[in-house]
Length: 153
Image 1 (cartoon, rainbow, N blue to C red):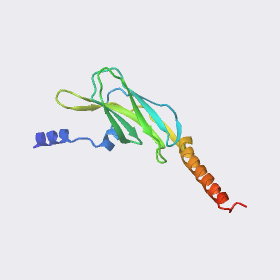
Image 2 (cartoon, helix red, strand yellow):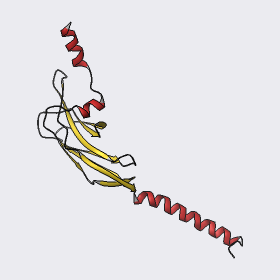
Image 3 (tube, rainbow, N blue to C red):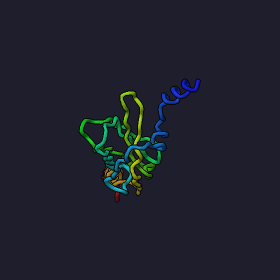
């Protein structure tokens, strides 16, 4: 009975939240953000650098202890980039870890990287231009219509 329980527990798959909040014992990767402060609509590049150790199966990116992206292992690659679209709710602590599965499909996780904080400061210049240019064009068209119809004088 106990053996059956142990087998059952070893087959339970970690959920995404458990993966990021229950790291394992393998050496931690390093996490880098290309900027610590960004605006809504921008893209932040997150880089996770994996130690050149035994083969791993996937890289997991986390935000505030929850999984946000997974990338499968690629042969001879030890740095993984995530292009993250910034929204108003993107402020938080980002980290990464990696997973190793042996020939018996036993999962071992790394420690979490040191968390990197991202602050969201508002709308990006792209977003502002996306609003400003159409609004300005609309006002120009409206003014020219008013002038041509005699409402301007």
